[in-house]
Image 1 (cartoon, rainbow, N blue to C red):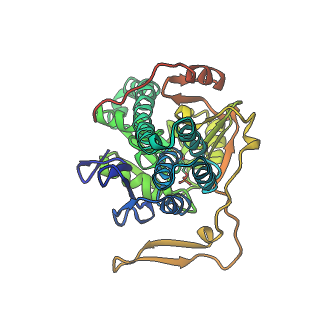
Image 2 (cartoon, protein in one colour; image 1 turned 90 degrees about the vertical axis):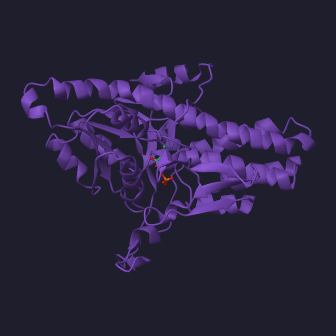
Image 3 (cartoon, rainbow, N blue to C red; image 1 turned 30 degrees about the horizontal axis):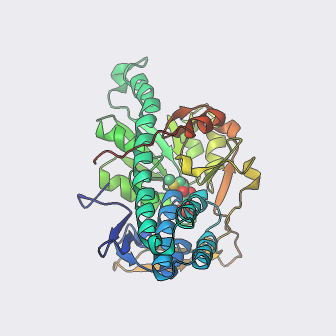
Length: 375
Ligand code: MRU
């Protein structure tokens, strides 16, 4: 997607392909700061401290972590140790484990002298594939937005609907900053906007780290997509008032029974949508599927520092970033929750839109590769 009118990926190779450039997302939207990662230590910090975040981007960054480890020492022991260190950075998004395993399986069968080149090639392929997956999710997502847009245009009172927009509610950030490019939940939104459809996004602020207010709003503004940030508690009211047409969220892990783990607060939005008969879709690439787990009950939920709840960062009038205390009480900070499959209308994947997870899983085994088209 474009950043200051320049096509930018959230992670890209630099220094003649030796290192990667990422955006320090902790500083968005106040400052766009690019950082270079060139060691496994730096990758661990960047993932754990959320310079990069979002399930697919965490996986892509971890893949490069293995490149840096192998460049330093290509032995089996070094690879296994790097895998364990990366897996320990964040527990919930399965894309991390998927990418680490893909790298491991690529590297271990090779002679040591071939491993560094193979690692960089595989990491680049993981990134390119993620772009293709997200583009395809966007195309398939359009098929659910199209009838909703048509309904507005041809509804009972078309004259009243002339200025009506399609209101899409999203939670957290599942846009290009959370992936390598395009995003999952936001990919169809970008395509719909580019096609001239009248879309408007309700952006949940997403406490405690405010990925919605800080990252999703930033992305949408950069692309010119109309949007409004709402407090996390406002969605239910808007749904009851008929101001939400559809919800689309991303996912950090989807289990065999279709349960969806995503940023904490997603479950409450799904409940409200269900109660108001509003379609609730989850957008995900196959790299977010975890067929090893029977249900969402088994997903490890990351507990992050209580300080993320007790403190908040923002921009002071003098332009400096400042952190203030919100409460002196103790706090608990589970970072994700699980939405049961029964609340989910459908899964938007790179292979199509599926109303049940069994069909999505079957389609995900389709061998045909996807390729990204030029932006
Ligand atoms: O803690 P984060 O910011 O990594 O959580 C991100 C989310 O929960 C996203 O919704 C999810 O990773 C989907 S990303 C396409």
